Image 1 (cartoon, one colour):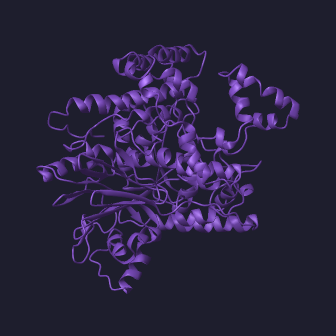
Image 2 (cartoon, one colour):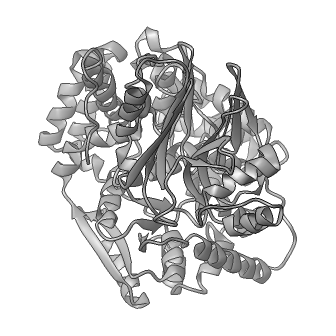
Image 3 (cartoon, helix red, strand yellow):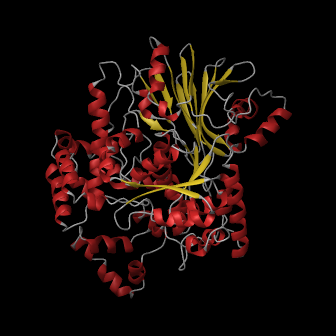
Length: 622
């Protein structure tokens, strides 16, 4: 696991500029660094040694050194591709997975990415043609950012690496804030930094003579087949076991995250590492440590755990938001940050359970709630009469409920979080930040590609394109890399997806359970109680924190600040806070989402910008 940064364009003292850019992401690769500078091209690399520890430094070159590679990730089928390339006459100098990208590009061209199995973001610079080829993995496990400014193309693993470059203009993207308040994460392709974009998952990028082109090379598809449940369970178990084995390829120590949910438990039970890692809070119902220890004991594995300190968590919020690059208000980022820190004291690679919910149908929102089922079973005339309520009580809970019940999936489901309704953002935001893509603008292009699917599959399809990439995987990468540890996700794999895509909906979500067939497969490795456990999902007691005066006072000070006044109706912010503190309403997620944005904004657009005319500040250490 590593990180890279670079640019194509003229700049004075390119070597010093590139070194400073690389220093901003040294946490991604503390073991070594390397650079390539020639003409207008500058490629920088930070390495965390995982495979072929002595020969895997980058940049890497092909035989005649006409191609230069910088690469972040792991290719799990590299040995198969390597054999094919050797048979075609290619000569390898290392045993790394990285080198197959160079020879693979020579041999297959852009079709290389279709052959890869793994997590990756990489750049190949052609010194002869002065062209660039870059790609991001099928699911978006590894991040990739790019942008063109002042005659310069920027590209890298983290946005913060661009900041020291003199041609980079740090401008806040006003359109990003409003969608964030609804989704809780940066959902647009253009980031919160104006002119900087995310290369979407399963896309590659070419750059030639100043022209940038982005193309999709793959998209997840669901093609249900009719087979027995037992057949599917066997296939799932076989492919998960094979994937876990493939994801353990490393020349360093490998461990596993472990919660009380079935996903990480299934992975740990197959992997049987020396150690599993768990964190939690002492507050009641906000810890999975006891369950994780119990399972680890049954598996004969040491569980390393830590009870988190709320004051330390609050003190580190600015550091956490800095590491995320963009504002992100999923509370689970906090325990994940400390979980990665804990694991990094013992191992260099850790496996986790991300991806199973999206592939196998694990989220509660994929099925109707009990109240929704009752409503849909009401007589038609009752439902028809109730449809008048949303217009009479538009901002009430009952009004929102009935509106959702009478609407299609495309109109109601936007993923696993919905913090502010759009009409609520209209009331809380200043006018300068109202002009932004609507929720419909964001989700409709994805739903349009899923028209033939049933409602459950449509929800999975949307989550694979939005929630998984920009919430789940983004925080997994940034929080693990903040502590120089490689996180691998064996349940989110092309081979696993091929099996998951054939499951009929009834074997994904039904009256008995979510991830129905997947849980049955997990029973082959786990005690039944674990296979049927509900995911708690890194619970964080922010509801309690936001009623504790020592934390509330910090939030209140921020809400009363000049920074908050730039973006928000401060009276509305303070009303949310006061109502929550008084216990009359539970506004925890709304308060938290706004607070995380303001903490992030201060880190980048106040603290860093204050140093913009000085020597660029040293990167934040963790």
